[in-house]
Amino acid sequence: MNIRKAAPSDQMGILDCLRVAFEPYRQSYTPEAFHDTVLDAGTIGTRLQMMTVFVAVRDDVVIGTIGCQVTHHQEGHLRGMAVRPECQGSNAARLLLAAAESELKARGCRRVTLDTTLPLQRATHFYEKSGYRRTGTTTDFFGMPLFEYAKLLQVAN
Image (cartoon, rainbow, N blue to C red; front, top):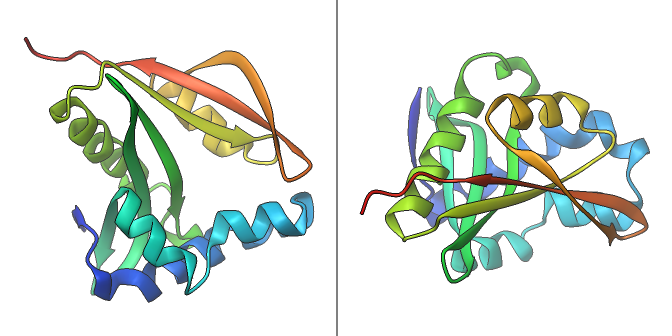
């Protein structure tokens, strides 16, 4: 498995990864929230322009993805983390998260946030195990509660 920054040629692989990873949760999402989560041919380009996107690739197939960006001075945000169901437990999620956190640290971020929904209990457990804690901030995500988690990053001086 190789973790690297996504290239424009990875767009279809990222879309497929997001689609298969979130398909089991489709009925738990509102249609608008599901569409915003899995993206489409139009919105994937915007994500690649606005965020640094990483992919986990095995045998030329995108098996995982995560996006990160600096949102405020010294604060980063993660979005769109997914690992294909057949590859969950392969260490891809841990390596993708480490790559995104490393990118944000290199850009001077001291804190990173992410948002998740109630149906994603496995992901929530993974984030908590990785040092993320619920902040108490809940927002509306197309008719679904969206829970914010945050982690302080150790940044070298």
